[in-house]
Length: 467
Image (cartoon, rainbow, N blue to C red):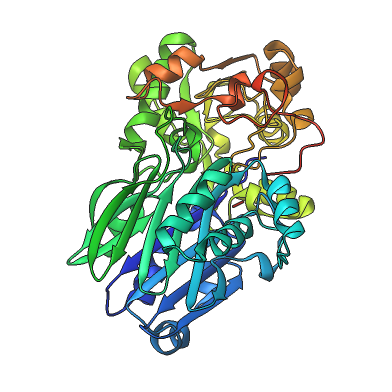
């Protein structure tokens, strides 16, 4: 099971800021379907609306046209990786402290949350949620006494460890922050004379904003009075961008880490074709995640591409559903094979990843029942053997099939004639910056230390770490 984490959008100086935030979140809906929220600043007061569910269910014309007044807005969509699924855990997280109205939206995950919560509680802080995002808020308030908001944010970020891209609305300032390793994406653009921020550039395309660049790792950007300034937040660290953005999570029409997601996925498929050719009748993806790697595999191998599995577009992503029973139902409803394409055929399936293998096993069984002669699978990323503690809610290590099971046994479990994962060198050859990505879910080398032996993460008794 793969769960996404969160999406961020912010805009400064627009007459319809709340409506622009709504459209931005709508474009980022694939990053989380649990909750959505927008806050605005009208020059005197901060306003908010949050709710559980999809963006178009949470907001209506009354919210966007009347209640969420102001020319500065920021929004957040969430799938939790820390904090249970409750409205009080929906973001942006809003507090009022002295003369400050502060709203924080967070994409990523802190690995020293419990340590910081205990420290802050001992100093008198009272927590209202179970989110690690609230830790940022308490730290900012703690350091805001006698200093600027920028200094307080800088000191807060010096205390935390983990992955974070942040949008912070503090009175008349909109502030964007990215952790020193740049694990989670955050980009900046311009809509006429207005600055905009988002987790992915597909949000800019919808509102016809111009993409400028990504927020650099360790950078803090402050927009105030329509002017933008850039500050070095913390000392530079080696880039460790989450490569799963390029493999799976980001929308294919986005630029992430200054790379075109569509092109990178095609290249992964082409590299896979070179590593593991198959004598098959055709290549097919399991829509939609395998589509673009399948195109690359087909073009590189010369095998025809067939869409022999049809997706019901009115069923949401299976891993988003919080109920196991509902998720299993969605698996059956979501994809249906084209029967006439299957019988007697040698089929090569290109998939983006395998987590537990149970969903794929159900689909392969169906193909067998329809008379497929051979079924091979090629996976456009390496085997996932380790959990992610930086904002992707991969299952625990015990539920990751590749953590304990050799590849031939995985193939037998799923019901395949052959199985090949893209190698780590092949994956890195498929992206532009070969030394700039976190590969911890593949090799267990976690770039942000948590105090465990030899710098490895403690894989047991570790609380799930936000969305």
